[in-house]
Image (cartoon, rainbow, N blue to C red; front, side, top):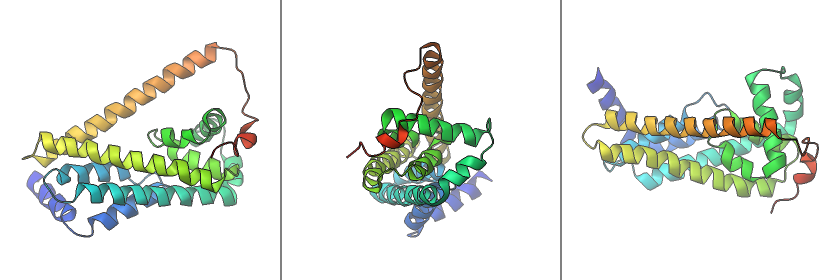
Length: 219
């Protein structure tokens, strides 16, 4: 069974269409987060360690797809994000994600887009929220270039390192890469939880109402 999976993966990853597939998966994940774009890029990175596909091609395809997908999500927020936000039930996971995005955008401006790329559920909520509040498109594109590019490099390199560690066993390399990604995500979530607890014990200095004013403060 393992050999069959490995052969199938090898056929997919050595196909010239793999770059288009990575672009498409990363694009769709930008506004439909159920698509496993990070896993796909990590897998491509594992096989890139053996020479095929090309590592730079993997990074470029993933970054361009993520950039395009984030802009689709931003456009959705711009056109109807406020109505979508109003329909979310308080207490649900999606409602909490949008509330976090609003607070983070008020506190950090466009840099939150880079941070949100590595937070489960935060990516789409942030891009839609930025569209819904009328965040300037040029500033959004600037920060999204940093977010999509860094995410593509990170995901591909995690897989690439796993592939180098287990050059003759791609499955183990993939498991190592996914393990590294999961560890990083867990650490980020722990840091967020600790900071949230500390913030809850400190007096609040803002209520988030200044969000629209901050929408024009970035380059």
